[in-house]
Amino acid sequence: MGTKDKLGRFSVGKGDVKLMPRWGARALFEPETKIKKTSSNPGLASLTLRKKLTDRLRKRGIVDETVLNAISVVERHQFVDSALASMAYEDLALPIGFKQTISQPFVVARTISIVRELLSNNMSEDELAQLNILEVGCGSGYQAAVLSECFGKVTSVERIHPLYEKALKNCEEYISKQKLKLYFYDGKSGFNDGAPYDAIFFSASLEKFPDELIDQVKNSGVVLAPTGVNTQYLLAGIKDLSLSKSFSISSYDVVSYVPLREGLDRL
Ligand code: SAH
Image (cartoon, rainbow, N blue to C red; front, side, top):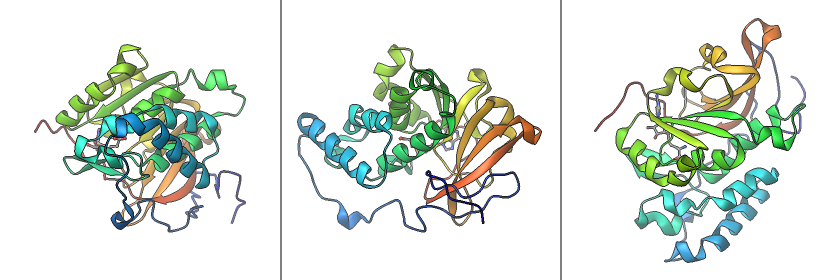
């Protein structure tokens, strides 16, 4: 069966992915009935609300202080429609239009924690803060902003033009500081221009793990991809040259992401 490490991983090895998530079948999205209205002026109160959110993430097992700090710095209410701003600091995915959702804070924190942990072998915090990251599925730009707080250089691609434009606006600060680059692009096969990456995050789900991205990541780099048809599992593949150009894949949580789509939508 393999042993469970501190991140909840069960097995490593190509062709031997044991799908035994740490979080069991527990849904990451909470029922809408639990949504409480918070402040009618989240801008003013957002520091307190963000602190409450990070406390909640801590209770759910997020321990990486760099990630918690990044979540507490990024003003999530700026990434959603003003009508939803009062719910921005609930731990929920929220609609951003075009049948897409802003990533749930727990999922953002969990995925970045997993990748930082996998990359941290022989790497100092300073080195981790320099890394080159790709996100496929920029959406509102929220996860891209949190990634920009954690890593050196982030590229994020989006296939729906109006969302790409919104993300450009939402992420202005990171773009102007040259921490983040956004592209209107179909990232189903990654994005070669910024490669090789230390990590690639898929923010939309795939039917199968994207082994073909092996040349876009550095050796020991990580591809994190929610994968599956009926049930999705968060899979992380570490590039391992000893496996002759392949990934060593581990399975984490059961998740619920919007599906990856092909082609560009200009709408
Ligand atoms: N991380 C985003 C979540 C966005 S939801 C946030 O924090 O807001 C997933 C996004 O992936 C959607 O915006 C969807 O349009 C985008 N997407 C789906 N397939 C894609 C593809 N092939 N290339 C680029 N983006 C894609």
